[in-house]
Image (cartoon, rainbow, N blue to C red):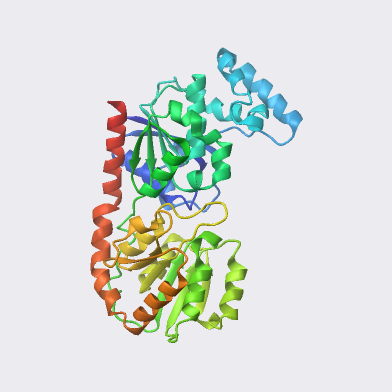
Length: 408
């Protein structure tokens, strides 16, 4: 099949799920063309080079900064593509992205697709709602007519202001053919917001179980101090401050808490750890490369992502790193917020705690710090759970079925 994959920035190191999707399509014999608004900056994932993905990418032209330069560029584009003038004039209407359309940005987004017939692609697969919304508008205008599949990943539904900017995805409801959500939580929230009647699917982001695996040297052997780890952007919705409060309430401080990631809350997290007198037990590593991240997870005994809903409605819709930890044989503690509880087996591969309940989290951590044999027992199940439900091959098969259903 000829498949167009539409993203905002490519390649983007933090979006390995997009990369895995593209490589899976190529391995299955599909012809893939990548459409991206912006070009990512190095370092790139090795697979970008291995599969020559930059050569498969088409980027939006630079819309220029400054009204005069942009106006001249718009006139030039309209002249160069005068055979499509009636369609392109529509991209300048405020109906399509409001002021962004008036400023010509939507026109620049449309131009790369003119190289192809409207039905050239068998499937157009857009990652993130805002990119899918653009494709829906291009279908409305007539620049595209191919079936449209949109993958929602979290903020594109959770962040209410973003949803409003997309006009509540009304164009998606009219012109998309199938919607994929990484959790039932996200799918149900989207349906509640938009009342969509389109065919929807729940397919999580997959895990490369060959990369995220158990160490050969008996990773889950009993260790002291117990190493607890959290991975994620350092923002409110990750609930790291609550984890620190909980750890500070434990009488036994025979643990290390390793926090991997960067973000605006880094300094406040460091300060809170010191104020709680556990600063010597808390280690902020910053952002790590994927190989470094995997090693840190493999050296851990317990993973925590105690997510909470922030003021903008943001919370993890899936929390892929929870599955990546389990793939390495590491049990997880998550809150019941967002899509987090869908990604573990409660009391089998990890624990689910009520969102924001520091008392319950403290009680559980005390039990684990007192006797972590339960973690060793759980680790025997975690990897099999991921292999059976989240391995890339499993997810690729599900997406292929969506394509088949959409084309039939």
